Image (cartoon, rainbow, N blue to C red; front, side):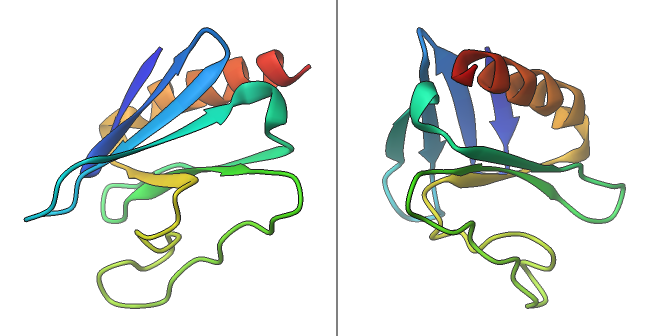
Length: 106
């Protein structure tokens, strides 16, 4: 299962979540999380004007707070390795991904 995000993607495969992020002018970075280790998920659907996000919460960590800056309004900061911003066209795929992660956690 694959979700295309803003400057990155999220893939769920064999019980592992891989978040791949690429910032302009830098090499892509990948973060792997075992789905069974996830203690919570957050999905904020994108709207026509504002990107949404997918975020995973791990044991012993708090979810990253939403930024209030002009470019990142309403999303976790780009530096958060456990989240990815999504465009509106990825809302449905992101919801399916979150349901699959919740099922894998179960």
